[in-house]
Image: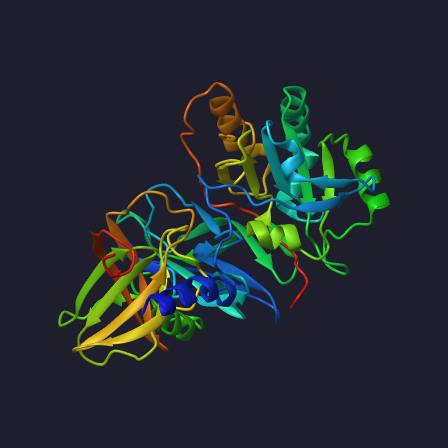
Length: 249
Length: 202
């Protein structure tokens, strides 16, 4: 585990990207922002010099880690959680600054091990910065960040019985996308997400969590169409009464 | 048409292993299990009392948080003292973390000064799967009418840090306080947090 920077120096007033890198042995995983049925997402507390500001952690899309009848959402092998850090404009060139991140995390294989580590990184302050050796890793990570949904998409969600029906219409939709909810306890994480064709699109069937006792106003999550194709969804949910169409008796 | 519809009702639960058998507001399914003293325990024999189910794995850091701090034992003592039945349920399969023999479990209970009504040994994971127990701990509360009134976490601080217990809102105590006072349960489901239950691989 290591704190890495995309650039080799700090430039006063200019944001740079830092990342917490997890290198996990085969069989081990850590967790996404919504960890799924078990586990816990890493928590990162920045310890920054005066005047520095940290932005939000950007979470790459996760893998579904199936353990029937349950499933978790997380990362195997290598994961980088990146965030922008902005040093103050008054920072003096020629100095160096120490940035630290206190990371609480859980890694699991079959058993789970919690950890807390303070990761530190010192960077010189210069008037211009070059790419660091970690640059490629940042680019790879960015390609795995969810992007805003394409403008030509039409997305809607219907709550019907024990399912959310997520309708996607637009170009180049995959046949079997995967939806990852940002909030826990919205859907049954291990349930297969079946798709049915719609004119100009697809309908994804998401089984509601039995823990969901109240209707929800919006469904937020990411949809992954394939490698490096993840999109953010934040869609109002329309409630349909009834369960299945029944013959009148 | 009508016949097809009934077929779906019969077959669907068999084909959907993720389908949860239990739901808050519905009857808690009955089960039988042998406890660490060799006694047969049956949920339905405790009709008329509140029953707490606590999923347990003595090696899981989240379980250890609540035992090494004494938090779980304190809850067991308080609520069994008020007539609540408390079952600690161990669904770890043989060879998996948290699996114990009856003797080892009795030693553990003594060492930890734990006082559940009984510790149920569920190495086949039958009770765990019946309740879709996901994590250790995962807590369930059943009311005297046999209805499930809570399914979720022990408290609202999903960490392994004992220092978080003091400031946490304990959902089990909250549910029992409300329900024993005849009030509606304000928080009936939460995300259970912890290690996954170490079921036998199928």
